[in-house]
Structures are given as structure tokens and as C-alpha cells.
Image (cartoon, rainbow, N blue to C red):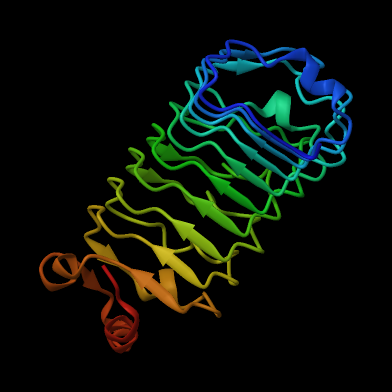
Length: 250
């Protein structure tokens, strides 16, 4: 058996028998009432590459919760739970993890540790959490990120250097926040960006210095009403306007 679906099964814990299915590659445990992942829960299911735990009651996971999956798990879905802290101690051993979905939780910050680098993660979804600011080096533990989704948080302050080190970043979604201003140097280390989503914020200005360091940029998403009323652009980069008229979408 390679795939097992136990969604809507009123589970309060992950069945221990799951770890005994050594051929298992995909496990779907969504929409249960699992509140905790204990140590060694999946030890034995070493071929597991996809794990879906969305819409449970998870608040924490043991440091060794994913022991045994470190060389194979590639996608981990934890959206719609009750996390208040980023589960760094549990996911840091997952050497092959590429997709991490933590949307719809109550996470307000990521405590990065300089010696922890999750270099395999390429896509991270943190939409609909409670981030109020992005600190300098906020994502330094994820140097290979290609997509970073932060839509529908409470972000008002974006610090200088908050995206530093994300040289492979291609897509960033900061829409539906409360951002009033972006540092001029915000994108200087993310020159591979192709899509920047900034709609439904409170931006009052957008300097050309924010934008024209992005060599591969193809799309900026802003509100048309923001552009027509309150959003202004630096005068020395007036040629930004044709770019916007071509690629703007709401």
C-alpha cells in the first residue's frame, strides 16, 4: 500500500500502525482532532514523501516527531491548525522537504537560528497567520526559498534586510496586509523575483529603487485605486508607469 487516507475519521492521535506500513508514500490525515505529534510517530514509514495534517488541532510537535522521514518527506501540510510558534525543532531534520504549508495558523514570528539551515525548502506558505512585522533576516534559515506567501497577515513594518539571503526567490506575496512603506533596498538580494504581490496594503509610495533592481520582474500586483489616488512613484523613475500599465492586475 502506497497511499492511505484517514480524513474525517475523528482521530485524536496518529495511529501507531501507520509507521508499520513501510511501503507508504502518501498519508492524508486531514480534518481530524489530532492535537500533538509524539516522538517517533512515523518511525518506520521511511518512504513517506507526502504528509497532510491540515485542519486538525495541532499546537506543537515533538522534536523527534518526524524522525525516520528525514531523507524522504518532500511535502508537509500543516495548514488550519493552532500553531502559535513556527515548529522549527520538528522540521529542521527534514533534509528533503521542499514544500511547507503552515497557512491558517496563529504564527507571529520565526525564530531563526544561524546554525539551522533548511536548504531544501523551496515553497513556504504562511498566509493567514498573525505576523505584524518582518525582522531583519527573518527567513535566513530558508536560503533556497523560491516562493514565499505571506498574504492576509497583519504586517505593518518591513525591516531593512528582511529578505536578505533569498537569492533564489521568484514569487513573494505580501498582499492583504497593512504595509505603508517598503525599504528601498528590500529587493536588492532577490533579483530573480518574477512576481511581487502587494495589493490591498496601505502603500503610500513605491520608489523605483524598490523595483528596478529586480532583473527578472514580470508582474507587480497593486490595487488600481491605490495607483490612481494615493500611491506615488519617485520622479527619477517615471518610466515605471508604462511597466505598471502593462503588467498590473488586481
